[in-house]
Length: 251
Image (cartoon, rainbow, N blue to C red; front, side, top):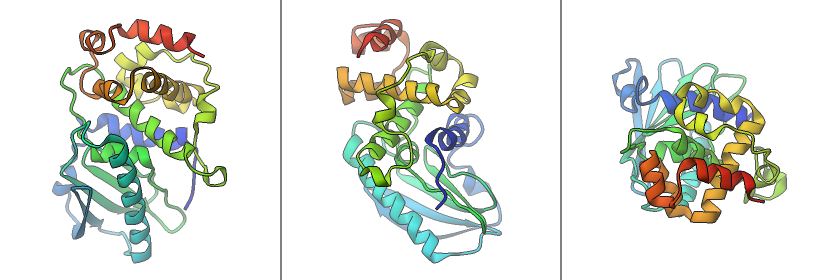
């Protein structure tokens, strides 16, 4: 498997995850011709449906590898999230020919395979596919993506160092804390590009890590669905500006 940096991988995934509501709904694969559905696997009450697109050469060993990866990360996310967020009832796992990074969003995982390279999934990808991207406040998609990458880093940090390939909490501990969180919260164009900058990417994980450690998992996860200023103040007792200030001052 070809490994790449967390920032590079997450940048490609983000383009799919952030555009999913407007341009790439999770059900879109059902409307695409030249595909074949073959097999399902139920993991933690989610039905993963396998779709093989025209031009993809079947490779059972590769498919089993990805299913094992999906099961491993799905189990991890289930142990971390449980019922704190709404699960997808099904996830479409599409094997497609050609070059491209693995992409995911609510209800889908797209895996691109060619003869030269293919890319692993990670915990963040399974977070995005397994949990519904329901935003009650209609305010920001940033928290959901930032939290997904937090879990990718958390999983990686729990591995032995010899198996670590992406960012870990060691990187997060030295975050410069220069990222404009308010802009990330409110500017979707910036959200789609910010993590091409390594320091900005690490800062975003650092902010979520601060919230998790200070306010706990349950409160932090409410940001997925309730992240307007009023909701933030109700949950945390402070507005977003105050949370950002506290994060920057924390050691």
